[in-house]
Image 1 (cartoon, rainbow, N blue to C red):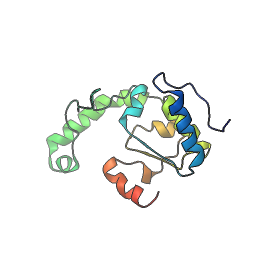
Image 2 (tube, one colour):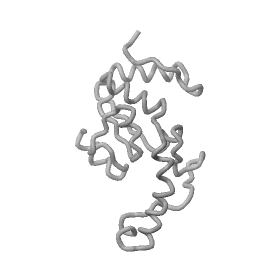
Image 3 (cartoon, rainbow, N blue to C red):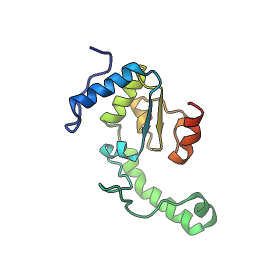
Image 4 (cartoon, rainbow, N blue to C red):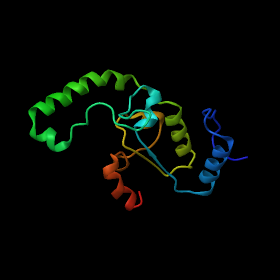
Length: 146
């Protein structure tokens, strides 16, 4: 019926939703995917929010605090060392692979992600440096039509 790659959909996605997505991808040439931490949870990388969207744990260290506080820098690097093994072992999941396939097939123009895990790229998606950003920096990218 169409040239959208076929895959098994999650149980909570209806056939109507899949048809609507296929229609969107077939009728629009410049589709942007905006992804965040939730896409990588199936790869074993925890996000920072619970099921109700409430932030878990400590706030991330902000740039000003990192630059001005030796204690903050030590905490940052200690947390990074503890989290690195999990990040290094993570592999792209079905969502990463589906996005890469859709992009390779010409159905997506841009993949914009705040994630620094590299899983979109490992799956084969093209996320150039301008589009691999935190949401606070994404608005100018979107405004200038990347």
